[in-house]
Image 1: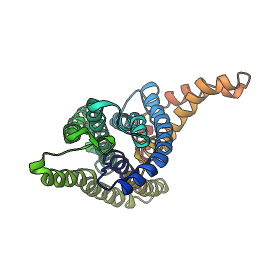
Image 2 (image 1 turned 60 degrees about the horizontal axis):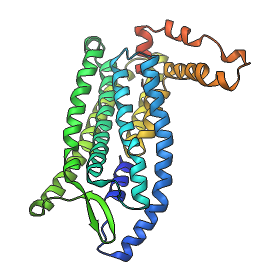
Image 3 (image 1 turned 30 degrees about the horizontal axis):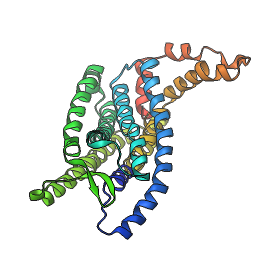
Image 4 (image 1 turned 30 degrees about the vertical axis):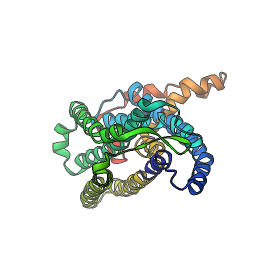
Length: 314
């Protein structure tokens, strides 16, 4: 995402050829980035941790969509858990050694690519459920969800290898940095290749797939005249806009909201979790907080309710 790339380039690519100019950049980064990272850490960690908890404890990973949501949350958490190191680096210099520089850079890129890839899979999942409903009954299974998730993680790890290989600790001026250093004989070629790879995998391919899927979804839904399907059209249009914004904004904080909390069934599970594990300690004498909503929600899970979740983006 745009913010992720901003974080990486700002915190990992200090160059001290012009000491005065770079000192100003470092001063700005040391003041601006740590508070930003702290906010992303708090909200992103809380949101994605709740997604993981509810998917595993309450929804029991019953569908392909649940599998993809879980992996998307995990990819976001990978990025989020590295933020304290980048916050420290932005405020001071790199003090964590060469091994941590490589590992955290690789983790960042793995989270970056896997997050985008799982957004694509969620879009395709929605496309199959609406445009190819009969085929989707056979294809949209937990088994296929697990298999495709494994493939996506392998691709994401392979795509992140250059970040792991080329990032290293180096003394630049008075500071230790963790930044990319390419072989001197092919520095220009490697830099151009990796920039091209990031734009193709992170922007061009996701954009093309999402545009195609949502156009086909809208075309199918517009053929159906009843009120329920018209509401679904509005919902899919809003989701298309939100997905696009997520790629250009703080996806690790926005994804739980877009892909989980907007679902009616997911909100009920979230309410139940709050009711049973948090509110009960805040107000032990409030009878309204001790209901059996979870049992009512769980007992009504049917294929039709699952399809309703898909129609609203879950």
